[in-house]
Amino acid sequence: MKRILISLSLFLLFYSGKAQKSSFEYRRPLNVVDSAGWYGLTLPNGVIRNCRTDFADLRIFQITATDTTEAPYLLNVQVPVLTETTEQLSVFNLAKKDGKQYLSFELKKDQFVNEIDLSFLEENYDGIVTVAGSEHQKEWFEVDRQRILSIQNENMQFTSARLTFSKIHYRFIRLELACDRPLTFQSASFKNQLIEPGVFGLPTLTWNTTHLKSKGQTVISIDLKEYQLINYWSVVMNETNDFYRPFRLERLIDSTKTQKGWEYFYDELVSGYITSFTNNEFHFIYTPAQKLRLTIYNGDNLPIEVRSIVVRSPQVKLTARMKNEGVSYLYYGNERLSAPQYDLVLFKDKVPSPKKNLDLAAEEKLQEEPIKSSALIENQLWLWVIMVLVIAVLGYFTLKMMKTK
Image (cartoon, rainbow, N blue to C red):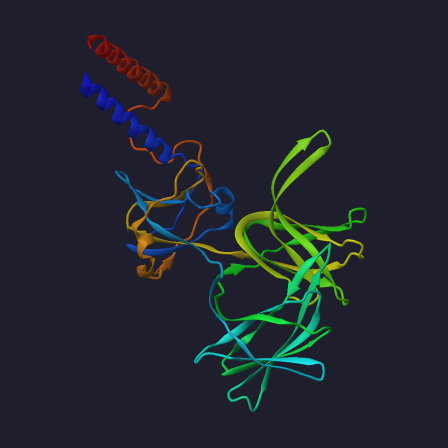
């Protein structure tokens, strides 16, 4: 009896695990794999719409008449990758002349710079900073000229004191400040940023603008046409005068119909300020979306119109190790499935570049378990009967042993 119980318990565990593994909602056939090796696969927007947002339910199966093999893969969301080195440098030769302030810095040997973050004690200032470089402090070469600004009041807390320019390599850097008030220097961070740009598309989009005068807001509804990943947004305003307006960008996540009509629910992607002296480019964690809502808070100011909007959609690529056998499918659409644990993730630097890209065919909606070897139990009713029977037998023998003791 003990052997029977153990066998039934193991069978039930195996069966439930098999059922969970194969309960996908969608699949797409892959083109023929002509030889074993590494292949690349770029996910279309249709897959992104129906798979998990963390991509944990993606599986590649190669199916033959007698066996089903899971192909391991590496997932790469091709967003920009930023690496930077930062140095806090001390200022020397603090000087003033003709209403301007001068700050000099000595860079370390072989130090490259393309960004400087400045910090001052004062608030509410507006000025221009000229960056110049020199090898021996006898002859200076102008690198760039940029605006710095700080606005601090009850309605706004905004500071822009970051200088960004093309990479330079000088022994000395001098900053010339022409500001509407004297500034007390606190610190300067010199950075060398390296950016791998990633791979992305520019989705086609349309937008509609609504001015809510009673709320002092401009609401812009943005339609991306397709559900896809996004991680970048920029805007150009049709305005020649200086401006700075708080904003919030959100994505539509759900809707419900009520007696008063449709009610929509949004999730914030990014917030900040749209200004006349910055590029108004914003990066955020990649997120799937199709419909966006941009809210610009005008306060008591007149609304300003949007001239152009740009959204970037990073590509999602799989690099898979395939065998030259059977028919290959990409399965997805399983909310209960855990992320796969592949050894190759630990050795991703040693994975070679794919020798060929695989194409995906049209999506297939699965009505039943797509991957199934010949099952001993086809009707789940029998499975429940056996489970109840096992529990009853286990309970019976437990009580019997307790009475014996």
